[in-house]
Length: 491
Ligand code: SAH
Ligand code: SF4
Ligand code: F3S
Image 1 (cartoon, rainbow, N blue to C red):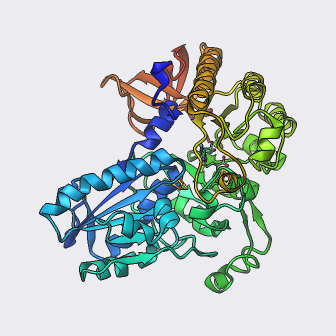
Image 2: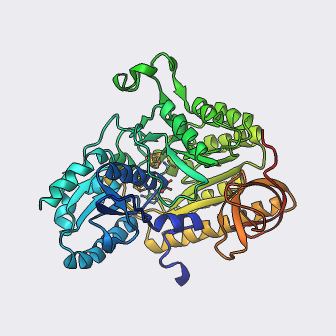
Image 3: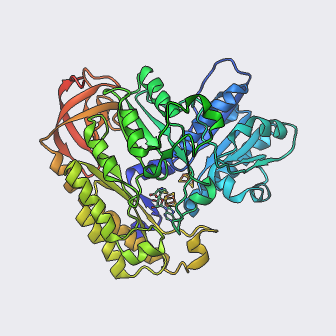
């Protein structure tokens, strides 16, 4: 059991997600340098691209070397205790750097900034600026205040801000795949979750600005967009509901409510050569209409991230997920009926939530068996201050038990992933080439529609190619393929 001592999240993707991303070197002749380190989820990484864009307008080029930076931002995550601890360790590290460069401005952005507000200035003396996720337009002012030697805080949460008019500066881009935020905030009050407190109320972004961003990306050579929201299925936009004043010109064009299925269709119509993905789907809200739209368009990838959190109805109720085991399994049945066995399904799971019994934990394992997840992000419960669960329940499952249950969930997922991947061997699939293989220079990696990584020999291929492959082999994490045809006709 020693092996799992320090595990609290597992899966290749999540290991990556808990890693931070930095800004690239950019030299467009601006006078100052900005370095951003981004933690947490894809929405946070997306926000850093908005931040870079706002700062660029105000005289900053990005740098990958914080020693060169005039301004250092940490765009932070609060989802689990460990995420916050990582940021605090990083601030200690920057403290040493700042000793030699006292004029450097250090800002904490994102969810931890929003959660702790001014308190962060008291707790971490090195921090000059604290800015929440809805206040990024104010960053240039706040940095200017800090440059005058004062501390600056803005953690105002907005009901309207979607940054719809800001063209993100693509950071760490492979030039093929990009993320587009379609909404912000979350109105679900899952009892374990800090996001509604750090990101505020849910609001949807103007669909025209989303389609325009997808078109722009496509014209620049991108071939895949992922539409991002905490709960994409509750996307809802209408001129009446959204800020009319800002959109008066477009009022005639959009006279009815645009829901997520409509939006998906609008983005899919940008080009048959532009793949569309989305995340995250909430089991209570995903509709058959969305599933039918997915079926209608070949370029909408057949993959759904549908976090279950627990396989037991009592625990789901305590979690305030507002669905039960039967409802969830019914949604999976609808996915299988409409989109077939090949549609990828992944999940998030929390082990050891307050009062969870061994039998209830077994229900999570049995649900995994029934659904046959392709992969999962798996965590043990970490109590977050201020959440409903922290107020109402005792975090009573001992850490060793949480870790053991998590290990069992991980073990089960590894078996399922291998089982599911084996079903792909021998099949012909279409992949989009998006990068080089980590292991070998002579191999490239792409993804199939179900979001699985497929490794192929690099010869004759380039980034952004669509390739018809035959799957020849697999591990639990990866498929291996041989090339059958490069850029087959998709129109
Ligand atoms: N909006 C998404 C989830 C965003 S947070 C959804 O509803 O599915 C990503 C994942 O982090 C969650 O799905 C959950 O599995 C995990 N998570 C959130 N809060 C947590 C906590 N307090 N402890 C452990 N894991 C947590
Ligand atoms: Fe958190 Fe629930 Fe909202 Fe997801 S849906 S962000 S888990 S509150
Ligand atoms: Fe973390 Fe905030 Fe995302 S808490 S997971 S960065 S929304």
